[in-house]
Image (cartoon, rainbow, N blue to C red; front, side, top):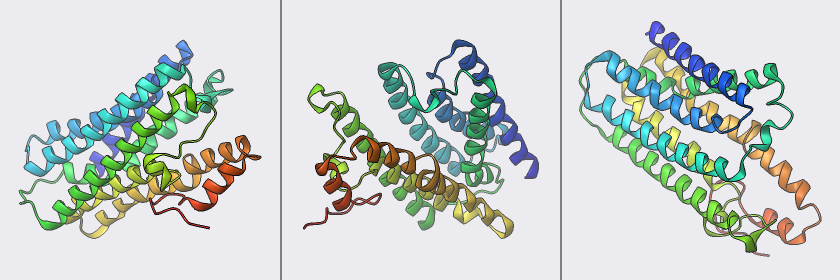
Length: 258
């Protein structure tokens, strides 16, 4: 099993370093998010094909990861084609070493998030669908739907000229300032729960996967960066300040009333 985890790490890093080379040479941001989703899909099917057991739960999980990845790739690729460049990399894409650090971190992140799935893919025992796996699948579906709807609502809102320089406050965004991130966290917890029936002993440490994505989005590169940007952009906007005060940060909840 250790060899499988190491193989996954090497593959994830290799994919990201390869595309770093292309992105660095071409000075483009078009590969970044595309490769993020693609890395998950490649890892999933690599292990399905490597084990050659093709158990129901292996195929089912690979399809779950692929559907999530393809949706994310499609959405983010369309977005980057429209906005041309990702402001996160301003001042970084021109510095190869700093740019490489991001790609290596992305490769490590993919590997960490995939830990529960990698463990399941390498199980060699037939197992029937049980209530815990069904619960994990339902949670995954719920998270994917929330993320998909939130991204679509934001995309439509931002591409309406009437909403230029406005923050998204319609649909799910009326109930959460970051519903897309809530959906992302939720679906990975769903995948962990789907994998849970196979976990035993030290394998429970793979819970670091959903914990990692939750931590990153809550405290590092997700919500904190956007909140900081919006606080600066709308510092003198009383309507935004009311929206922020009355709207849940993450979990969709009814707005507070004054």
